[in-house]
Image 1 (spheres, rainbow, N blue to C red):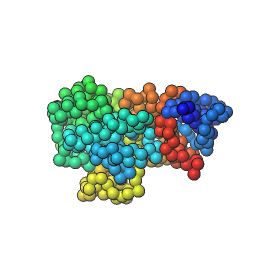
Image 2 (cartoon, helix red, strand yellow; image 1 turned 90 degrees about the vertical axis):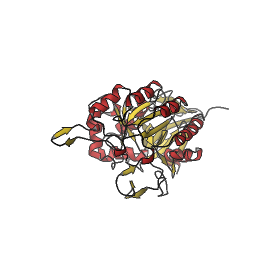
Image 3 (spheres, helix red, strand yellow; image 1 turned 135 degrees about the vertical axis):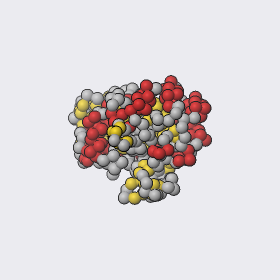
Image 4 (cartoon, rainbow, N blue to C red; image 1 turned 45 degrees about the vertical axis):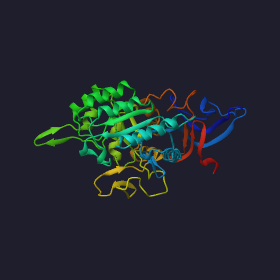
Length: 390
C-alpha cells in the first residue's frame, strides 16, 4: 500500500529560517518530506489550498487537565481520548495530560491509560504531567486539599520507577524533602517544576541546584514582591526571573495573567524560555457548561471556585492563546507560534521531531488565516480539521 502524499500550498510557511512565501509543505505519511520554495504540483499528491494563510507548527500543550467535558483525573481511556480530540480541533497537536493533586491510585490509573495510548501509532500524547500533590496548602488554589502533602519518598520513588511515561512532576520547593525529590526526578528523566508555592529566592535557588528547571503557570499560585513588617522580600516570581536559565509557562488567556504581564514575561524571559499553556479544565473545548470538579463554576467565561476564592483553571484552547498573544499582547505571530510549539518541544526534549516545520519532522501543522482564526489542523499527517473544504 502506497503512502499518502499531501501538498499544502498557497500560504506563507513558518520555518526555522523564517517565513517562506509561495512555497509548499509536502507530507508523506506522518512526516514532512519536504519544504519547497515553489508550488508546482507534486505527482500523486493531494493538494490542499491554505487560502493565503499562515502555515505553522501545531501547538504543544505542556499543562492541560481536560476538555470536551472530560478530565484526565478520571483516568479512563475514554476520558483521555475525548479530552485530547476536543483540543486537537483547536490547534493542539501534542499534549501532556495533566493531573491535579491526586491520590496514588488515581495517578496509577492515569499512568496505565497513558502507557496504552502512547503505544498507539501517531499518538498525540507525549507523556504524563503530575501537578502535585506536593504543594504548599496555603497556595492550593483549585487543587483538592485532601490530597495535598509534602513529598512522600516511598510514593514518588515507586511511581517514577514503575513507568517511562511520566515526564514532569510539580512541587513547592519550600517543602521538606525538596532536594531529594528534585534529584530523584532529574536522575530518572522526569522534569521537576516549581508550583503552588510561597518560595523566596533561597528556596527557588535550592530547587534549581537540585534539578528543578521550570516554573508552572508563572505568576499564578505563587508569591510576588511583598513586605514583612518594614522589610521587603522577593517573591517566587522575582526569584524565577533571577535565574535566567529557568524556563516558564504562562496561561495566555488574557485573564489568569493580564496582557501587560504576558508582555513583560515575553520581554524578560524571551521566546526560547517561555511556553504558552492552556491549563484547561474539562469544560474547555466543550459545548457543555459542566465542570468535572463540583466546586468549580463557570462565571463570565472563567472557571472559578464556587466560593469565588480563586481562579480554578482555564477554559482556554490553543487557538485562543495565539489570538491573545497577537491581538491583545501585540507580539508578532511567529513569536507566539514559537512559544506554543518550538519552545515547549525544546523544554521537553522533543525538538528533534516536534515544534518546527522542516524536512523529517512530524507532520503536526496548523493554518491560521490573516485574522488569526484557525482554519486547518493536521496531526501526524492526519487531517483533524479543514475549514477550507467547508
